[in-house]
Image (tube, rainbow, N blue to C red; front, side):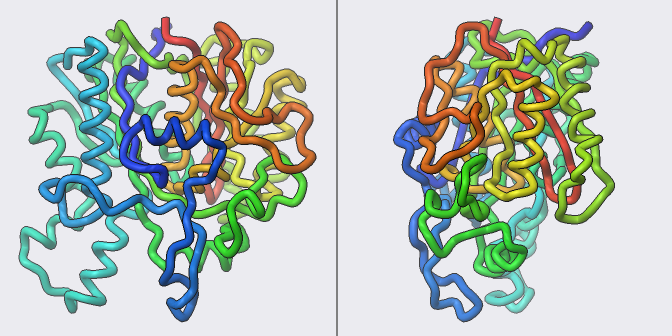
Length: 386
């Protein structure tokens, strides 16, 4: 049986700022990362509560916020791993989880540049470009590719990385998940779908597993992990995972939960973990009725009502293609600090819902679920680094 894969380096760029420390401090504060930003709404003259990534980073990393955030997060993770004693193997692979790439760049290309750019600047819009530039910067020569599974992309990337490592295909993997897509048009359409709520403060609308929840704030993030089965000082071990697809509806969760439940059971089997060993469910938890009901029932029925449950969506926002990755980073940092970074509750809710930062149980196993739009289900199992 293949062994665990260790997260040995973390980098993060979120609405809280540039850096994993900013993410952790933001989570512990219990205050949402979203701020009022102008230029939204159909007329472009409305304010919206969004957890938008600041326009920072190294200009040499690219023309866009997206490329700079992607490479900034990756660089932080690689530096962090090296500080922890990690030495790259002979074959390092790169996985980049992305759903909608370079949204602002393409918007500018058509609306501002009249579809004309220098060839070099045009190539920055290709999803392969930031990946290739990162491989060049670090002289990595393993496989490099993008993965995409909607909101489940972070879990999908981790599971793919573990398959690469388990097969001996690579010695190490750098995994980055990027989503900086909060253009006014994208936000408006998620509001029209009835799932994003940006006209009030996040805690007034997004209350995962609590009464009165109406949806999620929109968020952005770029998150990176260095993954290895040779790490000595890791944050957390990834024991296994699974992915399924409902094949049911473009936006709705299958109320039967057949393939969601199967995904959870298969993930636990792959991790050689029983249901009674799961102490926490780090949920997708977007604050929508369908998803919260499904994951609440996973706790009650599949996991026999034992684990505590929490979601950080109301704090970091729904980061779309990077959602699972930023939530995995929250869990991994929690293992390092001995704390579950649960938000404070604001209304009556699920009986197993955590209320605020909570001491992590020794040896605790965390199940991370993600329910991506269109029916993409995924689950990974985390445990303290050996």
